Length: 220
Image (cartoon, rainbow, N blue to C red; front, side):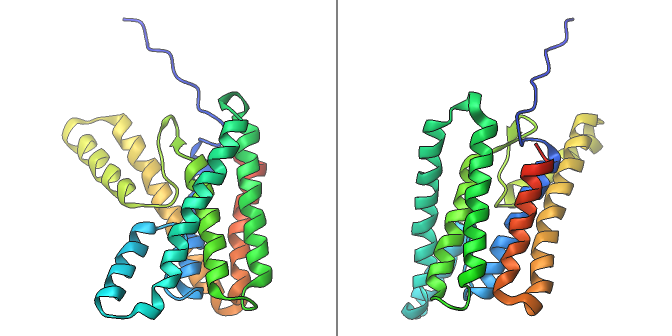
């Protein structure tokens, strides 16, 4: 039988780039949770849960941040979608670099204004950055990928491990290794932020900017 041709991996869709993206996402969500009053930049499911809980307890004063995050996340998706209209798939490298540069710019601005403006402003800007990343980077090694949420990755890991153990599927074992790397990178991002934020406070978000810059330079 003839072997099926191997589909080439697209730009910024390798394991290294995926790992760096999720590490930055781990920094981003843990930063807003700790620095901006218990909300998430990218994990909008969490924001919906928190909003529902707060409304249910009559704590209406604290729902504004989560709502701002939700709205600005939608705005971020729209902005990157417009960029995608202007940079079609044959210009994917340029489009992805523009998206990463846009996200880095937002993170630098947040580092400069953190503590000087309302946390609604920084929460909104970081939700914009998170949405940009999610909208543009949706594949890794020719498979669906999300840099913001680990639930699907945990499911894939469990499935792949079982496929290897039950059926001896070596491809499943390799996939499991990739997913462990992704989940571990997300955890490291959150851990780095959790440790360093006590020293650098609002400027800790620059860790994510440095990670994304490394993605542009080294992880194509």
